[in-house]
Length: 426
Image 1 (cartoon, rainbow, N blue to C red):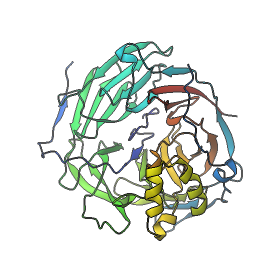
Image 2: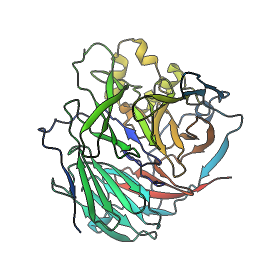
Image 3: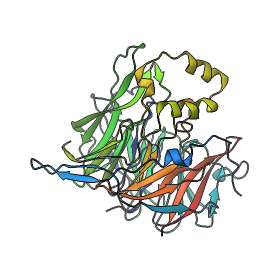
């Protein structure tokens, strides 16, 4: 059973997985035969921003109540505890990877994920070059594999990177719709391609204990341009060879009025054991479903969002003049007053869910969906709040280990860096 993983745009492992649908649509490739082959053999300067006041971000925690339904094994609750432990991230990073100039292997761009391996090395999925890069614990370059292409071990667009015990790196290509499994020494072990007439399976969630895979997609449908509509999401179960066995459940994602509305929620999910936990971000509900789509758990994120008025006050100063004019010209629709509860989700090495409270200034598409800083909550799979964590302002959290976190920063010149920080638990 895996105990380490790397969240990125999407991530998956037996103990922890992440899925995020960003609403990006790609041309559907020509359907091709399903294939499954086995191979032989220094601190960063942050951009100034307006931060949501701590009193607003740390809203009142709801008391927890749990009810077990007699008709099935579904657990329903309002997440929360009487006391929440406050964990902390040491502000000064232990390690920084990436630079403005230098050897090509040290220059990072379009980072899709990063994680700390059990041996202390750091793996980084570099989307700019479609490579996986390994760095030693002291920051020195170790090795690199992958690259642009359509052949075995190559990528068209890396979506996620995750670690699977004992020594495998799983990389999903969201454009080629292919999962590639490597040893940590770069040896290609296996590839599995996913195809389905039901949709474009661009988002890999993870693998169940029976070898089946969970993959998600946005159902492409005609949309009215004058009505706010959510992205229709389908999650399918694929057999070990990549064939779609069934669509196990449906959900919703981003809300659009032609393009994403200012406070659009996002669909996210995590596979823990054989349960897929999902949320659409808007109403704070987290649902746990089994491999057949049956609901086995339901609870609510413990912190309610700010009001629509407060959200607008936080968003407007972040908009440039063009975006401000668009914002002011929007019609007065009730959907614009719905502020999401959650903006991001990852899981940690202990099988907990980490959810970021939605920050209107940072987490919407109109401000680049930076998802940096803010307050995160660590919750058990039963919805119990374990801890709250304040993340450094410039850091977008990607990975949480037992005593380290890994995040992404981007400076004023657009240079991306990976930072490793110490996580302190009382």
